Image (cartoon, rainbow, N blue to C red; front, side):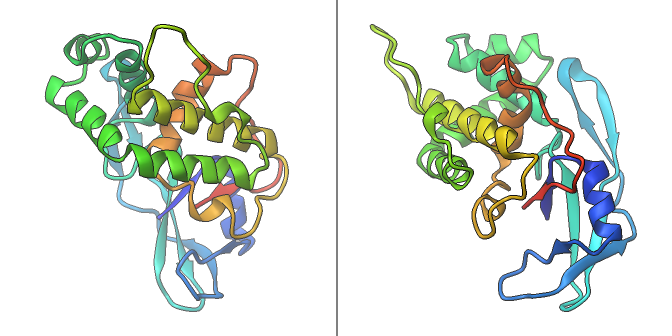
Length: 217
């Protein structure tokens, strides 16, 4: 599976055989293949969104790869911004049940999201900082000093992912560094921060629509 920031650009890249196979040691390129099975996901406010991702076939190893839009999350029935909205509310101090009710998400589902991020905090933070470093800017990966309020693992992860999203945004018009962010940005919650969290934490940044193909694994 490949997470893509721009579905139009990735479709163009497939048509031009410009995407490399993400499998280790494979030197093949992906060509357009039949689309993946359509799926329904829940967006903000419970809205249903139908998604049918493009799929590529490797010309060397024959493996197929789903090009999942960054608005979605692997193995999740909710969009990235829906997940991000719940995580943000909880990080800001709202009870999980209240955050879930606000965004029309089952409380048990919201609790699983928070637990998953908290449990994997160290790994997610390290991966996010690695993505930001690959694009040459880790400055926004660290929470600002807030006197009297301890920063927990959820805060650390959200800021690290927000910093990675900001670094990606700044460099989106340029080719991604080979062997850098491409292998890391597939972590589930980077997509959430690239959309919902980035809009709220980094209001001065605009989500880019690059003229050249831009896809990140």
